[in-house]
Each structure stands twice: as structure tokens, then as C-alpha cells.
Amino acid sequence: MNASFAIVLVFVGCCSNVVFLELLIREFPGCGNIVTFAQFACIALEGFIFEANFGRKKTAIPISNYVIMVTMFFTVSVINNYALNFNISMPLHMIFRSGSLIANMVLGIIILKKRYSTSKYMSIVLVSTGIFICTIMSAKQVNVGNEATNDDGFYAFLRWLLGIGMLTFALLMSARMGIFQETLYKQYGKQHSKEALFYNHCLPLPGFLLLSTDIYNHGLLFSQSIPVEVPVIGQAVPVMWIYLLMNVITQYICIRGVFILTTECASLTVTLVVTLRKFLSLIISILYFNNPFTVWHWVGTAVVFLGTLLYTDVWSSVRTVLRGPEKEKKME
Image 1 (cartoon, rainbow, N blue to C red):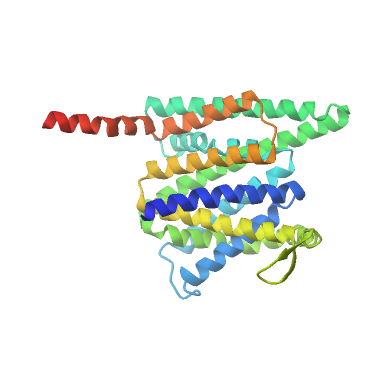
Image 2: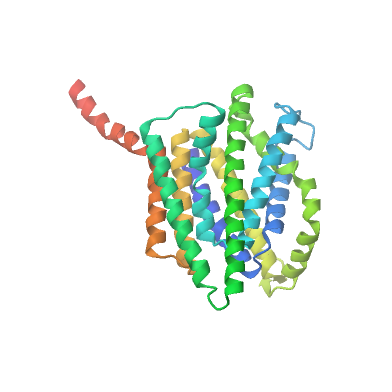
């Protein structure tokens, strides 16, 4: 029952979160910082009350390790959101971040000296190919969309390249953080993941002081948006603040669902659920918001997710399940 409930939370929370994020980005493309700050503040407040017990509970993992983890986590979150300012569409943004398998495998080989099966390497080739196809097609769209003036077109293309560079850096940094967490949990145990979730969102909050001007300016812009009547409070509220509130709530539901799922299911099930959630989010983004998506984008997307499923050994698990009844009949 807990696993089923967690899966519902993941799909409802994460998919609806993408919708509200795009509603915010479409109106104010540079609002990534205020969105990130609101998410961090909300999750940190919940963790401070229910996990840290208002600061009275001692940490199970040394705080110095959290500082390292938080530095990487904060950098990845800010860069991923800020990349949307550089001609990066939401579909490309989601597809590119699906390449975390590649980064994790590469850094795992380099840092942890790991070796993988042939199917794992094949999955990496598929995911790399899918991302390459989508990246190239998006680059062509940037050029075609700015053919009016060569200067503007060249400037837009440079901005797009910078955005791709930011996503690549965030991808590698995220993989490095995953390896760091893996070694950390091996040493101190996996039961402290909720504690890590709290400190990952609490400790970076002072860092947002560096972005305070941008956050404040977008807060003013949000306040100037179209007011919408809210029956619960009986007065009108600027629509962008409503979108932000819903984005924060759905983000919390999403992360909470993933946390419950990791405690109730095997890692294979968690990976499969998250992968299917990404695919559903992509479909929603394309259909609901009419994002430009060519046949080649669909091909690239299919290849990315096919490679992801191959990486998780879904096929072998399905064969094992199907062969189960046959083995039982033979035993009889």
C-alpha cells in the first residue's frame, strides 16, 4: 500500500510540478532563482520541524560531509534552473537531464574503478545517441528561428551553446554528488536519507543572499501579474504567486514520494518509476504547451528512454517474472 501511494505521489507531484514550472518560465524566463529559493525554503522548513525537531536533534552524519554535499547540490539546482535563460526549451532540458546515466557511469569508472556488463555499455550508447539527436535538432531550430538577422541569430546560438555547457556541467556535478552520497551512505547507513534531504535544502539558504536582488525583482514582477480571485481567502492574488505556491507544493509531494518509494521498493522499481515519470512529463510539456517537437525529437526521446530501461535491466526482470510460472510447473 505504501509503495502504491508513493508511486501516485511521484506521478502526480512531479508531473504537475513540470506544468507549474513551465507556466512560470513562459511568463518570466529568468525566474529560476526565485522558484529554487521557494522550493528550498519550504522543504527546509518542513525538515526543521519534523526531522531536526526545531534544531534539537543531533546529526547522524558529520556536518562537514553535508557542507560538501550541499555545495554540489546547490550548484546543480541553480545551474539547471538558470540554463532555461539561454534558449533551452523545457523538452530539451528534461531530455538532457535524462543523461544522468552516462555521467554516473563515466565517473563511476574513473573514480570508483567500476566495471559494467555489456548491456550497461549498450544503454550508454543509446542514451548518448538520443541526446545527441535532440541536441542537434534543437540547435537547428535556434538557427532557423533567428534567420532574420545574422547578428541576432549568431548571438542566440552562442547563448544556446552556453546553456548546453551549463547543463553538461550540472550533469557531471550531479553524478559526482551521487557517487559522494553512495560512499557516504555505505559508511553511515541508508536510513539517514531524510536527514540528508533536510540539510541539502537548509544549509544552502544563506547562498541565496547572493541572488537576493534577482529574487526580489522577480517578486515585484510576480506581484504585478494578473490578479485571480481565491475563494478560500476571499480576495484576489497575483496569478504568478499562485503558480509559485503550487510549484512548491507539487515539488514537495514529488520529493516526498520518491523518498517513500526508496524505502519501500528495490532500486530497480524506483528507477523505472522515475524514468516513466520523466517520459510522461515530457509528453505533457509537448502536448499541453505546444512545444516544437519534430519527428527526430521523438526518435531521440525514444532512444533515450530505451537506453534508460536497458540500463535498469527491466527486460531481464520481466523475463524472470514470466519464467516463474514455467519453473513452478516443471517442479510439480
